[in-house]
Image: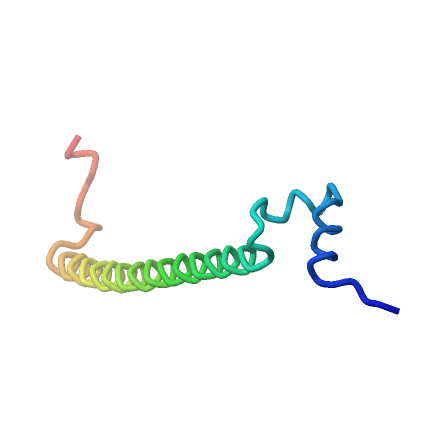
Length: 94
C-alpha cells in the first residue's frame, strides 16, 4: 500500500472549507503558519515584559506614596502635640 505524500495531504486539507480559512492562501505551505505563530509569541512576550515593567514602576510609586503618607502622619501627630484638636471649638470659628 502506497502512502500519500505530504503535498497530496496538504492539497486535500486545503479543499476542506473549515480548514481552508485557517491555512494561508500562498503556496509557501505550513512554514508561513509557523513564522506567524513565532511572531505572535514574540509579540506576546514583549507585551508581557512591558506589563511587568509597568508593575515594577507602580510598586515603586506605591512605596513612595506610603513613605510620604507616613511622613504626613508624623507631621500631623507633631501638630497635635503642639495644638491638640480638643481645644478647637468649631462653633466659634463659624
